[in-house]
Amino acid sequence: MQQSLFTCPGCRREYAPEFAFCPHCGTKRPADSALPQESLALLEKARREEDPVRKHAMLSALRSQHPDTLEIEREMLMLGRLHERGRRDVSFRNIKCYLLQIYLDTQGLSRDDIADMRRELFHHPQLEACQRLAPDGEQFTREYLEALSGDFIQLFLEGSNLYMRSFFGFVNHRNAPALLAPHAARMLQNISRDDELAPGEKQMLLTAFYRAFSARMNGDTAKLDKHLEEAGLNI
Image (cartoon, rainbow, N blue to C red; front, side):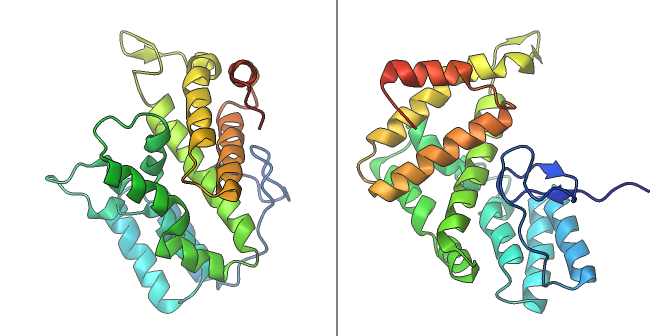
């Protein structure tokens, strides 16, 4: 019988349930769910659902049965507005982790866009609802930012031919730590220069992004650390 895997709330990667901490990013495994087993199985099915419209419908149904449940509200938070996309609406803004694009490349984004995206990072109503439900709102925010950063690195750095060199469409992901290091370093520098963030928010985001990069690169941060040292940025 295949072992059921646990999804880390920090880096969103799976691991065996006997671990008390995620072996990928070190996030502590949350306490056992208060949801009944049947609903917990439906939540895990929703987590694995790739179609955002169906995923939103499944989460909405669970929310109606179990209002004010952190596990469900967190999945709603990370889904963002992806379920609203359509053939005429292909904006990356519907992808939750795209909020971090403001620290990579602001081309095509207005000042209002940047301000709105920065505000959503820390002050979205759905995030604030999760913070109220969480035993430790600050720890929840750290894990949310790390998950968001991991998603961004996977989709918009690892998933980009602009940053990952390809040969006839083939990409050697073993080179990712070196190829992506200068772009990750640039993002971290831009975060550190963003004086519109409160000092606590800035440090939280810096730490979360660095941890997410380390998790995605299986701990290989040598090139990134070198870029950060040259920039005089200590995280």
